[in-house]
Figure 1 (cartoon, rainbow, N blue to C red):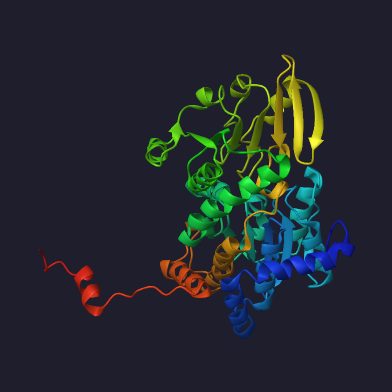
Figure 2: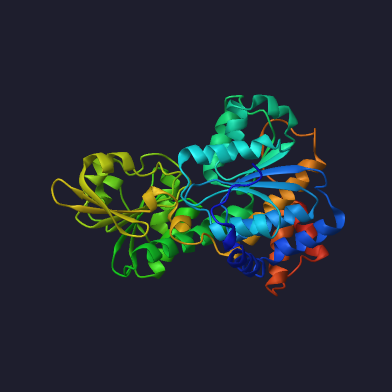
Length: 418
């Protein structure tokens, strides 16, 4: 199987969308130009399990320009843009295994199809490629130079593997780069989650009690965007420092059990399971909307919602209405999966420009350091992170100050006091 996509006739539409996104990814384009000249990834096979979007397509083209053989499958059954998958296959001759709405069996068949091509570097968004390598394809581990991980959820899984001495390959936690999580997670997730909710429901956010579960970088971005739309934002947290930060940022902070009785819209962004449990759901008022913007569809207890409802219907695309025995209605968005990619197009290209610049440079870093890295989770060197920020500023036409020699000396010394 060289590829598995829904409809190759969608390629023309996909190519235009890929080009549009590429026009808004100047940093990745600069890396692409250098890669075309230097070919740092020559003869390397890269297997990627990422959201198949226009932005991801531009990352794949960048890696290919560096000399790599690239294979791509979806990291979420509902996030694939079929027109993008079609264009990558038809116009760019890549092996893509992704269909929007694919079932669980097909999802894992696609992952195995990528691994069958014996990649030397893997790119993950959620850790599924690395996980299956360690459970079902252990003989291939010796062929792996290293792996990249894109998102918080995947890094959590990989850090747990490292802690248990189960990790057998070096991993670059791209999510740890400041030019990734401080921008992608905050500005990308913040905007695209609101976009997904609005496209799915077309509701007015102003005046609604909007409950954000989790105040990490994603939660910060979402809470601020919801407030900007006029919502009354409530934050639920388990970390006392993050909860305090939310209070100081001007948000109401309370337990999920308290929020469940008054909230109108609930969104989870934690990376943990059953953040909104059936016990919480059973207290909610009629007509609440539940959405998730964490990687996996485990943050909302969807199974209990289905079990305790007497009626279910698809009332809008990406909106399921559940009616409970007491007559109350609940609206679940996107089956509890990533709402920003199920109902919308994911993060803006300008944000993914930095995230995928980190991915591309992380591949180059793994090759340059082949055999030198232990089986641990690493952060990209600070100079790479800083260079990405500089390139982004340049692309935006922004010039910043530089330290003088006197200032540098002062910051590096201890002798000079008041």
